Length: 242
Image (cartoon, rainbow, N blue to C red; front, side, top):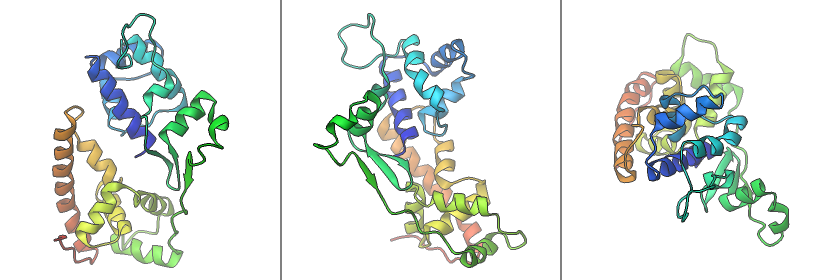
């Protein structure tokens, strides 16, 4: 999962555990000079809004001002959130399409102790092969399927290539029996953004984990039905996975 989504989930878990509202966090963010609203906090919690470096560094202080504290602390007196407490304790975190880092490793990097433990725990980071780029000829052929009267927009096409790594795009491709790139281009044609981004935009800002998972699945199925006419118009015969 991406760093933005993991931090957002962590913020929501801590906020709800301390019974703090989203608008309260936004209020204290504005106190320190951030132009945040309740909607901003909601977007951060769902991973729809990435934090700038400055926002990431100041976020623990904002949460502390809003009385959001770490779990399992016997007292709240003089207790402050720290950067590493915004990260999960285990698992891989996607920083780039072809680069990921162990959660524990990223915590060590933030604490300045990664070098000391690299020899004993070498798998702190992992490089994956960069995704293969589409040739310009193939890109133009694919582009004309969706935008027959428009010249190839390289920026949009490259964005669609990056979108193919999304979980929603991968699942949709299997369901529709087309390539992830085809799904990504159809989404860009229909919504002007990725399928993952459109799904997350439609998710409610609050809800329990199991309920949210069910809602996400329902929204995804609805999005696939919206994509079908776009794919059919581009000459693809979609079918449902059995």
